[in-house]
Length: 317
Image (cartoon, rainbow, N blue to C red; front, side, top):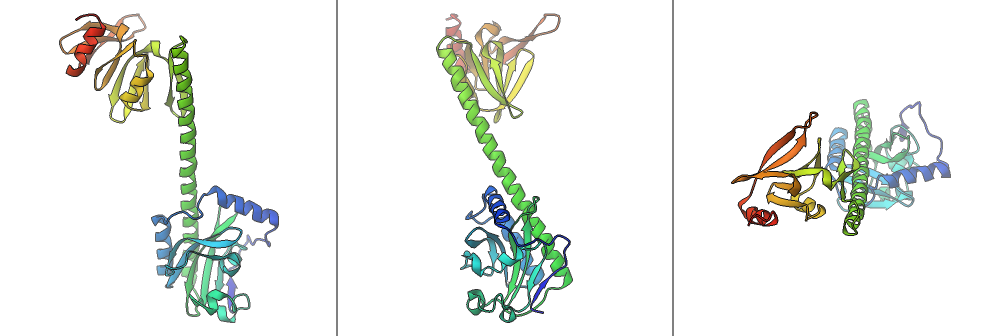
C-alpha cells in the first residue's frame, strides 16, 4: 500500500477558499515565515530524524505559493520549494499522519521533481501542525531515500513532536505579542510624560506618569518625598505609597522639576522642601506621616560630590 493515513475522528474536508484564507491569516499572526533558525525547532527535527531513523526531517510551513522550512536536517541546500511540489500540502488536509511508503509507485508523486531528482524522495511521513483553533500551518515530517514504513511507536512519537512544534510556535507568538504590547505601553508612557513636561513648562500642574503593574499611573511631583535607586529599578516614595519602576536615576531626574528636587547621592534624589535637617554625612528627610500626624524621618546619605551643590541651593554657603 503506497500511501497510508491513520484513522482519525477529525478528518477535514477539502479546504474551501474561506478555510484557506483563515489558515493563511493564522500563519501570518505567528510572524514565522523567513525567520532565522531557532534551536528549539532545530532540536525537534533532529529528534524526529533520530526517532524515525531517516536521513531527512523538516518543519515545513505552507503559504500561498511555497513550502518553507523553518527547521531541517539532511537538506542543507534546500530552504523552500514551490507549494505544488510539497508532499506536505496533502498532510495539512487531514488531522492525522500522512505516510507514503514508496513515492515512485504513488500516482500523486511519481513525477514529482523531488522524487525524480534530488533528494530522490522515496519515503515520506508527516504530521500536521494544528493550532488550538484547528488550523494546519504546516507539518513536521520524516523523509528517506528508500521505501519503508514507520512502526506504530514511531508514528506516535511523530504525533507528539508535532504537538511540541505547535507549543513552541504558541510560545514564540506570545512573546512577540507581549513585546508589541510592551512597546505600545512604553510609547504611551513617553507621550504621557511629554504632555506632563509640557504642562510643567507652561506653568501647569507638575506630574509624571509611571508604569506600574501594566498600568500608567499619574503621580504628582509635589507628593514625592524621595527617590531611591535599587539596581535596574527605582523606588519612588510618594506619601504613603511606594512605586517600583524599571528606570535609571538619570532618566527619572530629567522628569522631575529641577527647582524642587536635588540629587544628593548616586542612589538618592530628595525633594528640597522635605529636608528637615542636615548632618555631616546625611540629610534628614520627612518620609511621610503616621495616621496620628507624626512625621516619619529618614536619614539619606549625602555623596561627597553632591554636597556642595546641595548646600548652595539651600543658601547655606
